Amino acid sequence: MENLLNEAALLAARRNKQAIGQKEIEEAMVKVTMGPEKKSRVRTDKDKKLVSYHEAGHAVVSKFLPTQDQVHEISIIPRGMAGGYTMYSPTEDKSFISKTEMLENIVSLLGGRASEALVLDDISTGASNDIERATKIAKAMVTKYGMSDRIGSRDFAQEKSYSEETAGIIDEEIKKIIDWAYAKASSILREHRDKLDQVANVLIEKEKITGEEFNSIFEQE
Image 1 (tube, rainbow, N blue to C red):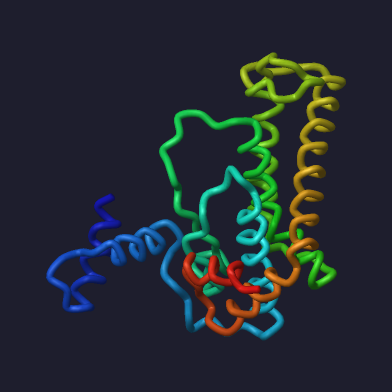
Image 2 (cartoon, rainbow, N blue to C red; image 1 turned 180 degrees about the vertical axis):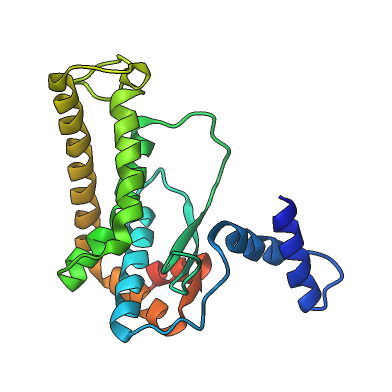
């Protein structure tokens, strides 16, 4: 929090403001969590297209998942280790998360990879973190939260060891969730390919768009 406010104060000072505003808080939050923008990094047109479609994939898929938060900002400007990012605006504080929401979180995470495969007929290493996070959620659903009918409500996450047969079943259940989510993401993107292209093209041109700009694309006929 201290780092965030320090960064926000610096931004406000550079803009000759007398007080820190919401815009400075938001920009500082992104910088603290993801690192500074690396606008000087030279990228090919091919790389820009790949990152644009990857991030557009996340955003468009999320748009059509009822449990997911609204898109706040999309950027293809590199920050830290990330080639781009999609930020969301939480609409409410949540004490619990449902099975449907966890499934749709996974669908959203796999939207980038699904977009690359659909548009570029290839996939990149840029989706590795998304896959890791999606797999972690799926594993928790199966082993911790009892959300697999085949496994039941037993909490395997607390057990130090279990049989190879059980481990195999757990892996199969995790794979089933991931495969379903990837197919769902791909289906959404095929159905809304025109919007995916529009979002990606704006990102290629502008490198960063707000949630309002993103939503306006879906209001166009």
